[in-house]
Amino acid sequence: MAFLSLRNVRKVFPNAQNAAVEDFSLDVKQGEFVSFLGPSGCGKTTTLRMVAGFEAPTAGSIVMDSKDISAERPNQRNIGMVFQSYALFPNMTVADNIGFGLKVKGAPKQEVKQRVDEMLALIKLEQLGGRYPYQLSGGQQQRVALARAIAIRPKLLLLDEPLSALDAKIRVALRNEIRAIQRQLGITTVYVTHDQEEALSLSDRVVVMNLGVIEQVGAPFEIYNFPTTAFVASFVGTLNIFECRVDDPALGTLHLAGVKLFVSPALLAQRHSGKTVKVALRPELIYIAASGADDENQLTGVVENVAFLGAVARIHLKVGDMTVLVDEFNNPHLAVPAVGSALTCYFAREVCIVLA
Amino acid sequence: MKRQVSWLAWLFYLIGALYFIVPLFGTAVFSLQKKRGEIGLSAYQAAFADPKFLETFLFSNVMAVFTILTSLLLIVPTAYWVHLRMPRWRSAVEFVTLMPFVIPAIVLVFGFIKMYSKPVTLFGVTIFPSLTTSNLSTNILLICAYTVLALPYMYRAVDNGLRAMDVRSLTEAAQSLGAGWGVILWRIIMPNLRSALLSGALLTFAIVVGELTIASFLARPAFGPYLALLGNHRAYEPAALAIVTFALTWVAMGLIDLVTRGSQGGAMAGAR
Image (cartoon, rainbow over all chains, first blue to last red; front, side):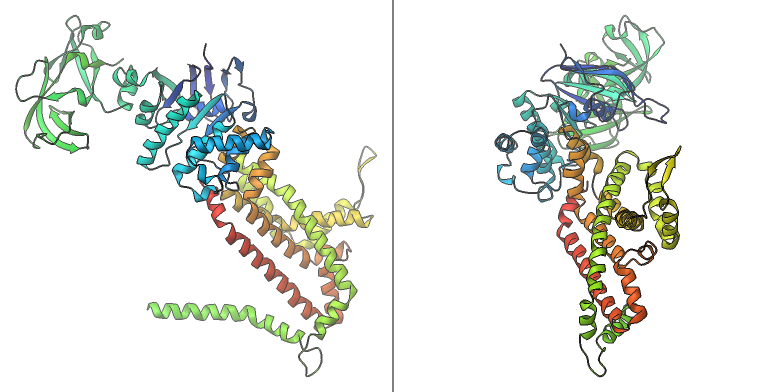
């Protein structure tokens, strides 16, 4: 049974023409780490705020631990929240910030102190309990915000783009810490981000949102490798999307700019000959071979540009009037093709995705 | 060219400083010359020796304290709520708080007297007694009038303080930790508004202690009317008291500066 259940949740802000969130239904299991991923304005933060109680749903219900909390005030829900802006209380020390929730609930002094010490140890800031927020770095402040949110032993932990304001390196280190703490405590967590790498690396499941609706829900591997909509395909990772004409659905053949392509016939089961379909292909699944490779699919073009991205070299190959991105994994002996040279790339039919 | 600009700037600075300092210096020197041909503090001694001075000064101080408390009770929750829930109303509320700048104190006090000197009745039943029939109720009326006069200063100070912090996130963080409105206001918002509240309080204090019109028309023994009365009969004592009040104002300004400087780090931390 789901620990957190959102049923047909809808949110329309006053004077707004469109719904910010439309028909949002999701079940989150106890101890699960779920991320809401999407571009700005897709409704992910609004959904999170409805779970927290800061926004009231226009329609639908939110059930947590078998209790409908849709009408409960935020301070009655026992949900911990971490904000993008840290939101630490500037007038309180780190220890006072962490102990605030417990003091509000009337916990005895000794219990508050013990819990604060536990939390400081958990976030590895034992020595900084007496400091004020402005005396901490951004990363330290966010760790304190996390400790403060979980000090009250919440039923659910919500994180609203908690790493957006941090440097790239600290972001990676802190996201690993967040995941480790979440696993250690087994706390059900909902995480909002627009950073796909963050969502894919942290989550048990990712909810991809666009224009207020859920586009796809799935494990990170599933979201990345088997996107079901054009939006998910284009939003998560880098993708080549080709507009092709179906040739023979039974054989899985398509036409692309005068070239015949092969995909798994099962992907064209519902398509008719002559119809246009979108075929998606990850750049890292296309490869360059010196001479005739085994795969049926090949595209020949002229190298337009080569961008070195560290782990990969991204080749922009001009094929007809379209540009195909090809990623070559970096190695010290990589022969980077010259701009303007002719190049043939290959890919297997199994790696092609036909979008809905 | 740069040198000329700098020289001109200093010249204007000097003219401005002289404009303020010369009359003050003149008053100070005058206040020290009560005895012919002598420089001394006899005007100050005479002023302080008058029991009316202490009585009126204490009265105005008490009124100032109550005005500050009333202003805080009225303005802090209002400004907080406007920031949190009604940001669109901010300019309308600001406009209302600026009204005391355009409505003269004399108009305000006549309005107060006209409105509150008679009991308010509804269907023959008195629901609000006259506020000018006893000293206590007139003092209450005086505090209300002072609160209106101090509104632009206090509101602005609180508003600036609230703008310097992320009110929404701090409120929501406290709510998610189980805090109700009272706890949020008392333990999160007010402590982070410390320097803003002090600025507003000291400005209010300065206004109330020197206020003349309202206290005169409500016939209350305040320091402002006492100073004006003294000026009609004496020459040197009002000058001495003017210097004392000026010094008190400067002490207040110094305190604001000291407190604001001391809490700058905290204020910055409150920002996003």
